[in-house]
Length: 235
Image 1 (cartoon, rainbow, N blue to C red):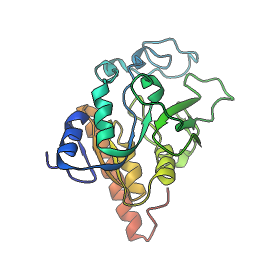
Image 2 (cartoon, helix red, strand yellow):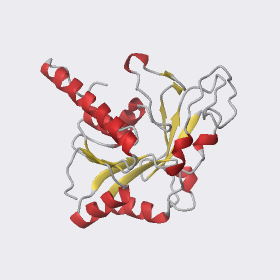
Image 3 (tube, rainbow, N blue to C red):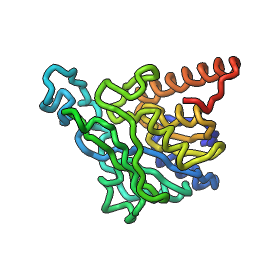
């Protein structure tokens, strides 16, 4: 595999990271949201689970069983081998594998004052920087910036705005960001917006093709903005 910057590969991230290690390619940051093995197809907002709000639409995530699995330690060993610093969403599900840290990221979805079928916040394991809280409203189909609303097609999709917040806080322009579980390509889109390089992998062909389409749309929009003299630093 000839590793190229600003590219997402349709493969298992283990294959990509092995190639990075062999080629001496080290990312400045790993920012990823790996599967946790939480049986999302049985959760309250899916067709397989009981929904508190019976009027809300139930999504069918029964096909997620193949990837919604718990990772083994060798995945994390490679993540650390090919990146200088790491942000790993769902790190609380891997407390028995990840080293202890005082550096946790709390994504406050700002929906705690209303009843909802989702968690009020999510945790990410971080290698440095202390414990930090980042806020962005995200509750079902409602999002904090409805004018720039993400099209959601992945069950664990993170909003572009929250990934942009992390990139602005922890990284700098020109840094190389690795995401071995690209899913909806949010990390790639956010990196493109903020002039960071990225390398990523997505094993699921359907999500890979949808993500590629999303990224190409972002690249075309950026080209139009650049021609109009609009800064790509703006979100």
